[in-house]
Image: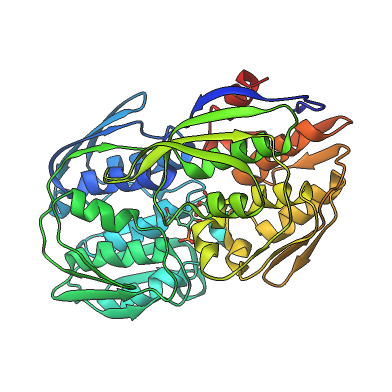
Length: 425
Ligand SMILES: O=C(O)C1=C[C@@H](OP(=O)(O)O)[C@@H](O)[C@H](O)C1
Ligand SMILES: C=C(OP(=O)(O)O)C(=O)O
């Protein structure tokens, strides 16, 4: 598609669509709890729709009407052996969390996904889940899909995460809920805590002590109402757009502000962004508020260490932000970018370079020169939603034509992205 270029300002207000991580988990907890769960502001992205389809194949009755989803939960024991293969599409969250759920269930299931999923590492979950007692097979000893799982009879374990990953932590917590005894997960670096919050919201008991999360198996959860806040990872594209475009002022409403996700706000403020948080609701099960962003004068920073998991999905758009700041920006400790929908170090560097950015890949991140003029060219999302959206924002600063290949990838997390962008012009 031809992207919009040469834009002179963005103004208006956007209600950011539901959070992807929370939408997935709302379906999963709704399915394993007893009784009805009602989810509002559910994200209608392809990834979350894949989660719904998988749980339907596991025998769960799920009614979806636009952003409202009603799940008839019957507990873990209400899940039935699927007669068909479970297809997670492009969704890493769906597959890794589902493996944890299926590990506790006494039946056989097969999990597949798209080409990108076929390259993403699964040993990070399959190895500790085997220690719980699950039988899991797959290519390269359980590293890659297709995976086959025969679960049941789990015993709780104590496990220190080898990578900072909320998907691994959550997968093991789902297994722990079904295991005999106690499960303890130790996180060297804190990652998003939506699973822990939702266990409490569904009436479960979970102890969080510094960086150790502990729960007992055999707990019964109860269905509830989940009001999904807007996704800060989606808001990030418009935060950056508002900051780097001239004559801009954008209000983003109902954005999730869970502290394990707000690294982008801290980095933008450190870079000098004219960003204000308004109408904060701190006491909700998931904190939320509105964000106001205005055209900003920015400076380069170093982004490294414990903040990385708190902004991991925002790094492609932060790279674009850095091209418009004064000075150099260095991103370190972000090797995990290599195992996302694409190798996001390579795809960011390759595609932004085509548009005129000066950016260099390093072993664990990138080095971005600031104050660069973006020109134009033919770019591709490589099938990665976050790369596609970042390029669409970059194009608005370009002086020549920009075409985007594989724009449909954006439907994974933000199907209304282009409508929202257009509404600001
Ligand atoms: O738990 C989650 O919902 C997610 C965790 C992160 O992945 P990792 O756990 O692999 O870091 C993130 O990149 C992904 O988009 C969603
Ligand atoms: C990495 C992402 O998602 P997932 O791991 O669920 O595919 C993402 O949304 O950026």
